[in-house]
Amino acid sequence: MTPADIHALFETQRQASRTQVEVPLLVRRERLLRLRKLLDENGAVLAAAVQADFGMRSPRLTEVADFFVLRSLLSHTLSHLARWMKPQKVRTPIYLQPASAHIQRQPLGVVGVIAPWNYPIQLALAPAITALAAGNRVMLKPSELTPHTSAQLALLVAQFFAPDEFCVVQGDANVAALFASLPFDHLVFTGSTPVGRKVALAAAQNLTPTTLELGGKSPCIIDGDCDMQDAALKIAHGKLLNAGQTCIAPDYVLVPRGRETEFANAYRAAVARLFPTIEGNPDYASIITPRHHARLRTMLQQAQTQGAEVQAIDPTAGKPVVNTVGTLGDGVSRQMAPTLVFGVTSDMQIMQEEIFGPVLPVISYERLDDAVAHINAGPRPLALYWFGQSEAVRDDVLRRTVSGGVTVNDTLMHITHDNLPFGGVGDSGWGAYHGEPGFLRFCHQKSVLVQSRWAMGSVFYPPYGARFDQVMGFLRRWVL
Image (cartoon, rainbow, N blue to C red; front, side, top):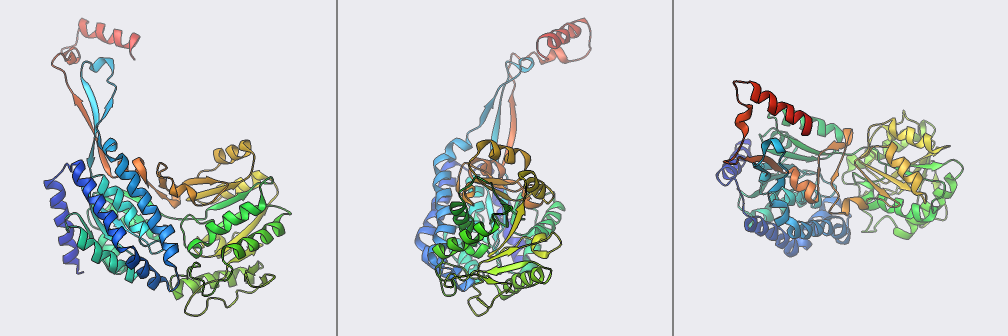
């Protein structure tokens, strides 16, 4: 699309949103049902497009990681939409009675969505579902790194929706920059923290409110009394789903000192259970591009050069391959071996950037206070995971740390709960969507006071005198 085309699409949606300010429940439901039909009738086509973009990513992985989440979100939204739309009555203070008041939930107008490549269907359509439910028009810019998926989304959305309802804009980073500069009524961006800063700056020029779903270094804390085998399996699943290319994937694990070998053995056993083979296994996704694959290899080579121990895991072998980055996945498949890294330090790239790959640093701690201090020394993470048995210790960790979300004794699962808002804090983003909190994120909550014909507001009018003093004295004693 040319810049003129993009501006014209935006203006079409803007005019439509101003012409039809209020969008009835039946219209909103019908749009969501069309989106459900799009997924139901074209799931196989979309999954094949994702497979083509990644090189290796099975349709079953896309089913669980993209379609299942979207279907659950659609079902939940359709079930609760009527209640979410209702005006919310609020209590009126005595000095304003007998007036009444309520909060009216109105569409914002046009919502822009800039989606990432790692879950190219889920993270494109989930915010669109919630924005459409709130009565908005939606413009979607999918990632240029998944061109087959982006093209299919553009084709299918155009078949199921009018351009003034929901449309897709394709293009490279320059198109994304232009897209972010449009005067949307709200802009959602999912991606890296550095790019998120650029998006926020572009949106600020138009005073466009934003929801930024970023990333960061999400920690796992293993407490001393946890079931190590169970914890390792759940950490391996959370880390290796989509080959670690997940914004809430565990980025490093904090293990009690002296139990590092126990964790490593349990983690290797978990990898072998989940992925008996790596290369050629369609359930184990490829790294998205050669550039991303090279970045991960460079990160590991730097850590090894600076003294870290790198353990590549080959499930078909009986022992880890120590201190070698390995050659697995160097070919067309780009399926990188699961890797543990010991002895990392804060000056290594691997501990300064979000990893976004199947690489897991293991850090030892003496006391729980040390683990908490390590987490709090860095930017606030998008997710935090704690494994243990003690509710008191769990609650202490949650009180003393701040993260976008938490799953206890598992990983990733909080994002699948439709009644929990999903979002970051600080460097990991701001704003949240999913469920009613997401619906409200894409609404303007308009305050409405309906004055009564019996209103006594005139007692506050000048000229002020003895009657005014009596009224204010009463309010101070009994109300204020």
